[in-house]
Image (cartoon, rainbow, N blue to C red; front, side, top):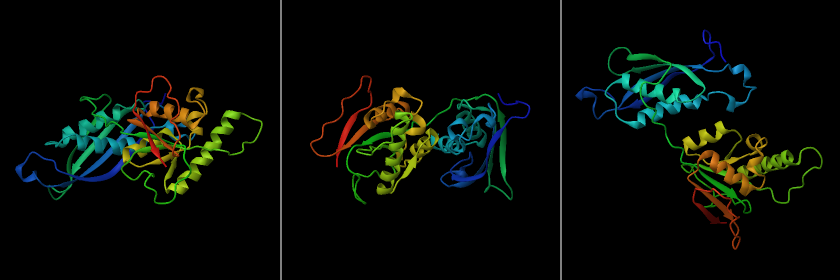
Length: 273
């Protein structure tokens, strides 16, 4: 546990967003600048994170809390907005305490606002469902500009295949095979013009941004034998972890879909490449 008298903290400072807010008639129908400062006391010290991004509270949680709160409704009061932001962040298990400051920058000669400190939410967290899909790529690498390549706005997590890639002998065969898939991920991402994501934090950030990425599975799946090892098995496992809306398979013509394991709830489709 972190020392609660001197906890480790992360913060978001001077984050400025324009939004419609305010109780006065003059504030309706127009945007004004809001400045957000958020400080979060962490439940556990970052010293045990071992430089692993998935072991800490991501800064994206703070910016996403602001975005989620603003998207939820139009606010009359910055106090209500601050409470919503606090609730969104405190819903994360690594957050122990939060200070939220919201300031209006366009209502007078200076900044006008409120600061609140909370160690428990006083309103419910809205949360934003992460509308992801998993795309298992079992086709040849596409040509640049191919319509099969996911575009911005499509939160597709692409699982690569590594057909025919020779693997070194010895060591842990599972880890070696997963590392081969990591290599395939970098190669496929290069052909598609996409980024590679290896951690849950990177995957979540891509989903929130509606940005397709190619998943390098070794880091998440190496210590999870239940994830399987084939791209199809890994794809189904990832879809369950992400609560994906659907699973698609990119396949050559006349190739059948892989057998579906028990318990698959998301719709499964195919893309012929």
